Length: 161
Image 1 (tube, rainbow, N blue to C red):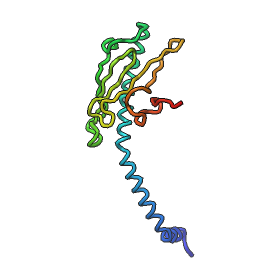
Image 2: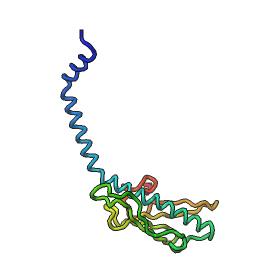
Image 3: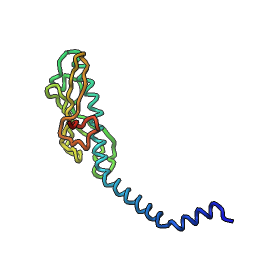
Image 4: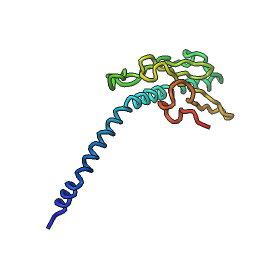
């Protein structure tokens, strides 16, 4: 009389090729994961810049609600124009560890620009554009700029019509 353990062992011996296939397949998927790791780090850099950009947006909204006009200079907002956020030490050899960017105000729009040592998005920008609806509420769009759409979050990709 065979037990469940014996049956499992027999089936496993008969399907040895399946186990080898799974082993090779998982190794290949791991390779693909390493290959796309640099793109993942680039997306993280973009998200970190946009999260800090939200603080600048809040300062711009506060300025607009007080003055009923958009700020024309960084000093008017009362926030620094250069930011360094992130982890130290670096995550890998290509990652500087910190995301360094600066911003400018151009016609009420906030231009966030990466510094030189930021990998695939070095010296590229995302532009935060405000719009005001009839009730006076301000909303922001982040679809403009030179950062490729593949590295932007979904909300910041231009819609295709």
